[in-house]
Every structure is written in structure tokens, then in C-alpha cells.
Image (cartoon, rainbow, N blue to C red):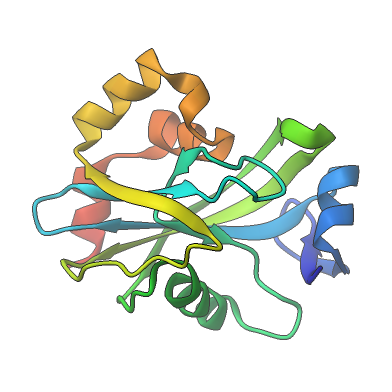
Length: 175
């Protein structure tokens, strides 16, 4: 398993640790979430591969991961977007937030999550080791489906959609 960056609540680096151990102990760490919209304003969602060590088979944002200790956040976001979705896209950070959530397999997410947005009409080429399938949804339809089927979505994704997503503001930031 790879190492990820441990941080304090102000995003100051405290060190690094193995990813699985971090999630077993619930240590605060740096993460990122990427949201790609097409020109119609629909969000590109991915369904996590079923064999992932947590949240397998759940729908989530376009791409999410952790920055490694030997890479910049800017490098990590673009590298991971290519690795997961086979896409290259200009990305802009729109905000970051802290959250803690109990997951399946007795794991804990305790993240300072940096959220990035991009706009692209390029067709994704997902990596089957990471992504089971993908689809585009309007935010209205997505919010409705989350109300009806909340267990189909990752915890961090639901927090972002419910508390932070204002598509007009996000898309305005891209200009």
C-alpha cells in the first residue's frame, strides 16, 4: 500500500503513513475530490470498483484519491484523473473541508478534502481496476436519487452534494 500525507486541521503536514493504517486508525489526512461537468452542466459520476478496500460498488464523484508524500497536490490531481478516468482536464480548486465518517470494513475516513472542478466533454476511458462504470447526471436528478437511495453513494460525496454543491458558483469560478 502507498503512503499518504497526515495533516492537522489547518492542512499543515505532520508526516505520512500507510494508507490502510491511516484508515484503520482514523488519522486526519489530505485527500482530494474531483468533479468534472460536461458543457450541459451534468456531473460525471463513477461507480467505484467492487473490489476496492472500502466503499466498493458505490457511486461517487468523478475521481478522488490522496496526494503522496513525494508529489504536489497539483501533480496528484492530474495524475489520478488520468489513472482512474483516462481524462486530462483543467482543474480549479473550489474549496476544502474537514469530515470524519465510519466506513465499511471497520475503516474510518478522517480527511481534509480539497475539492476541484473541471469542465470537459471528452469521453472518459475508465480504468476497470478503479471504476466499475460511469454516468452523467444533472444535479437535480442526483440530489433526488440520493434522497431515495442514499446507500448507493459514498459518504464524502453525499456531504459535498448536500452541503457544498452550488453548481452555478462552481462553474462561475471556472471563468
